Every structure is written in C-alpha cells, then in structure tokens.
Image (tube, rainbow, N blue to C red; front, side, top):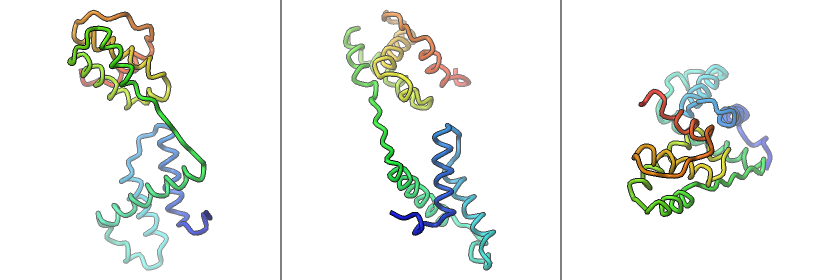
Length: 163
C-alpha cells in the first residue's frame, strides 16, 4: 500500500486523531473532521465549493478519518487484545452466593472503568476483585478485602462529581 494514493491532509487528520487517542486527549471525531474541512476550504482556490460546510460533508469526513485511522493501524501492524474482567467477576460473585444484584453492580463498575482505560493497566482478575469489593461495599454485603488500593481509587475517580 502506498500512501501516495491518499489525501495527505486527511491522512494527517487521521494520524492526529489517532495520536490524541493514544495520549488520552479528549478529541471528538466530529470536531477534528470539521477542522479538516476548514483547512481544506482555506487551501482551495475556489473556496465557494466549501463555503457552506454541511452535516453530510462532516459525516463523510468522519467516515474517511475512521477508515484512514484503521489503515494507519494496519500499516503499523497494530493489534490489541484486551481480556475483560466479566468471567472473573462471575466466578467471584458465585463464591459469595451468586447474588444477581451484586453481579450487576460489579459489572457496572467494570463497565465504568473502561472510561479510565484500566483494562489496559490491570489484569482482569484484579479488576474483577476490585469491582466485586466495591459492589459489596455499595450493597453492604460481606466480601473479602481488596488489596488493590490504587485500582479501587481509580475506579471510584470515574464517579467524582456524580456522587
């Protein structure tokens, strides 16, 4: 695959979007796509073509940015497999009697820890232990102490400003 066949500005936009994700910067694809169209408009000699940026134009660029992002990842031979904590949560909850409410609360904690990218930093069993512990605390149910203080704190940080 040759990058010569791709729009350089669109490829740069996609690379910037990918870099923002990697550095955990909050950049919305719609915003970066709109910026792309504004830059494109400033570079075109007949700018009247892009005078009115429409929602359809932005949506097309969003699809193009996503496509180019995957092309970049493919060229880099990037593959990420994440083991999720749900099977380990099920095992731990079953150890404590299999309460479906505890399972649901622990799974909710696991879902919310994706916002903090904890699945990239901790083993699924560690996340499961922390989630079941927090579910036990939330439900006033007896569970074993969790030794992962930093992980528990990181999960609870997701809720700052909501509690």
